[in-house]
Image (cartoon, rainbow, N blue to C red; front, side, top):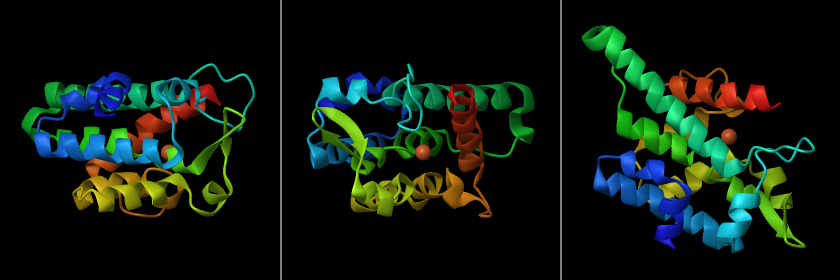
Length: 177
Ligand SMILES: [Fe+2]
């Protein structure tokens, strides 16, 4: 199943630390197995279930935001160089790819379609995402990005990686909304 994750999210190969890359893939494999998602079903999940006729998919949202994060990091390196606030690019990519992995638990498959589950009403994806990341021994810096990326992180002091992810995430979200 690891090959499906790499096919769906080729950006995972941008993670330089091989252990971290494997841990990110393992979280996705675990989340895919939990409800028995297939590649086809995964590709059919809309970005949000809150609005009708959303053409942008969940997987493309994850990929787009991850790419935006890398692009932001590139610009900061190019322009600010050594004066910039240090960003751990591997943690940024890992966090970007795992921030929404918990949605695969939040949603369930009913009559072949993704739907918000009762589980998801109780445990939003930042929590299930951190649970998965903890299980697979991800660094706390990456768990921090998952934990603080959404409204749950409002009022928290976000790390540089979390600040970049949070803003990129909301660019995509606000434009689709
Ligand atoms: Fe999210």
